[in-house]
Image (cartoon, rainbow, N blue to C red):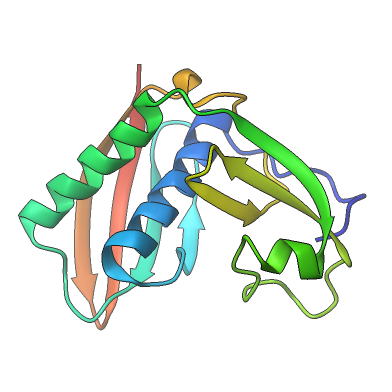
Length: 150
């Protein structure tokens, strides 16, 4: 990420929720963050690499955990730090080799930390309620379509 790049024009509540969903997936399934995401105002999708599809009970647990984090009214902060410092709190494996030495790290309370150039809410209280709309599993890829509603 270059510091002079324009921030992505994502919807702030949806994009912040993507961070929370990613960390929830990492914690529940030990998978990486979304390998592909499309974040929009009305609905979004994320793809995760999993060995099998989550059960309906696990999908309900994902929803509950994401909403629990949102409900904690956590501050969403940004910090500039060098790669070495950032690597202690965030997974930098998706950064390109030519990314800047100074990174913008977004933290959602103590729940998640991620290098990101997107726009975010200031507090999770600004997000609303997370809902999974549909999901499917194919060849080790679980795709989840979701939204946040007020």
